[in-house]
Length: 602
Ligand code: F6R
Picture: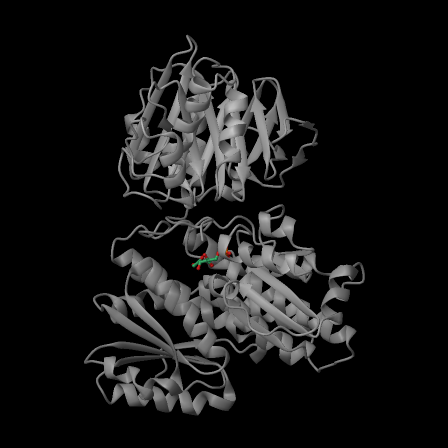
């Protein structure tokens, strides 16, 4: 949430910052701003409410700048507005700062130090820049010492970049909990929340760690801890293909990412095969899973929904009892744990603060952890004992699609390899089954027109909708409902089909869309019965059934796959329904209101 960038070099800083912010827009798009230094050492501040495109229109193209910092905001403290947009400045405008994160003690800082300062915004951020100025002015510290002293007094999460007008050839940076990378190149250096932002400039990045301060000039990066002791760290090469970040011919990233799913599943199969083309896991990961007596999956949103499918797979194939928990609840309300638990964090971004607070706690308790993520080097990956990567390629649309199916595919492989290692065998071949699922997804995405028509017919004017199912189909219903509500704003519930009649069926009115997912043979008849009950009360019903369980008149028939993998396929029409519903309503499909992709605040 919120993205920050910085550049110091010889090229046009404002253009590099704006392009970087466009790449980070997924982290928030309530407002944006840049501060650039021109060649005469003069600073220029540009801020605008809304998207980066609006900021671009406001930036004076004639400013010849070679250093600067920028920010795209997801509002936490204070409404989206120009005043609350970053960068923020000290009273004299000597210091300018951008911040990603939340300062929990900003009231206390203000009361203790800044009674006489004129703060303009409602943000938690503004106190930081005033505090740096206060230390410089009142205690006559250098900017570096003042910056260090200011952050020692902060509680909360932050990634920060600071410019002092009196040192136009320096950018200061620091972090705690929120991610920050330093990119290096010939005659320039950069700062960014995510390598994606600066991959056009460099693929060489240094991770800044919590409790460290960085000083960047055109030709150097110096890292220090909070005691001022120098630290050395080599850069790594970011394995990001700049072309993966383009939309190409697609109108929206979400559609591109839906279409990429067959290729992602095939890539995952390849990545988890050994030289004998057998599925395998790194031996340390395999040991830690086979030795645990219970798995606790902790995740948020779509990743949590993938966790529920993972539970089915792990319990049915690897026979390890598995619990699934919502990250924001688990850390503050822990159940009684087993003797030898393994914590599995599922996270597309690897940055979700709700999941991270649980990871920090379970590490303190001495438990083992595994992160399943799309982003190598992300916070959850670095901080957990082990990582399994999704290999889904960058997911840019805020609504997660390919990461969800990738998570399920990786969980299926994990279950298969662990099950085998524990001596459980079964008839089917997971590589083949995943390949069949990839082909099934392909055939659905190749026939989108039918689903677009259904979206018009069922969802064009409705204010609410239901997905219902049982067993695996219930878990997919929850994901399907989340997708529809987050991008189309149709209030949708994903409901256990049998539970409707215990109260919620009261919400069914003439025309309410109710979509039943039917892929589990043992409960198919029951689900259809529950759908009938809603139809009898006026619902506009749709059935999405797996081949073999379909009946004449069903609106969507999905190809038959191993029932354990049905979620991989049944979720695809629901992603497309959400996409077309949002598109037909004229929404910004990739950037739905009020949301951001990487949720780095609790
Ligand atoms: C919905 C969506 C979110 C994320 C959730 C967790 O489409 O993407 O619900 O799944 O914010 O994010 P990650 O997976 O990055 O931990």
